[in-house]
Image (cartoon, rainbow, N blue to C red; front, side, top):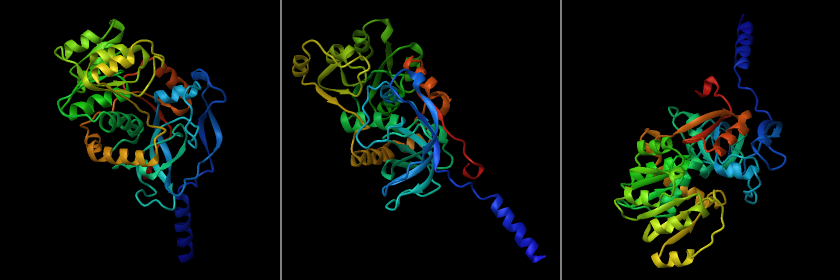
Length: 359
């Protein structure tokens, strides 16, 4: 009788053991640069092994960023040593940690900033680029946070040195970064004005705190922005557009203003008296990226974000705007959606479901 009971208990324990992690996974892949339809889901990809200072994450969600679409087209070189799989942010469950990691534990629910690898069932990243989340916070939403919000936070605080009472012009104000920036600016006691490609995007930005916006399809935006700011120049411009806006940017900025350039959606070539305009107003032109930054820089950024902004994310004061969700296998459709400029907020890739024990 005792032996029978022991055998029953053993069978029950074996039945409920979690499945062993496979050594391979599914990930999004492309052989040659091209349009969105070059993206395919590939099986049998080796699961990455975390380095001593890294963690391995079973990905629940990732998100589309403009840099992903540029990399797919062959226009965004992958930094040396970075994972070539697309995906700069992810959320999920930690399944392994490197020998030097003490800040994160196996089983933690996390969101992470990546150098690449988010479009896959597993990814690795430095433990210093991971934020542990409470069980109450939705992991699918968390997949849309790190690259976007850390970019906006970096632009405003580490690059532009945002101050209370300033006015910030946010181009692409309906994008994920744009909507995050609007909320950060408003929380800091400053004013945000946006340019965007539709009234719906402007309305969303205003709902999150912007004082107004201008539809870029309705003609030059300079006079309309100045009018929204009571005919006063702005202190900071966040610019992911590039060449098409350089002249108006220098006109709209105040003396000693800061122009933060973090993208080149309209191109990089400039013809005209740019240097004279910068000199005349003593404009600070700050060009910046995030992916190629050092681990120490990213660790500092994550730490400051956790201190100054994360509480407002977790309590819902900052809203994470998700435009649309696609399964991992439809990454190509998700890219096409972004390239049509159809999204207001983030486009999320759903990668895996949580097991009952992880809910």
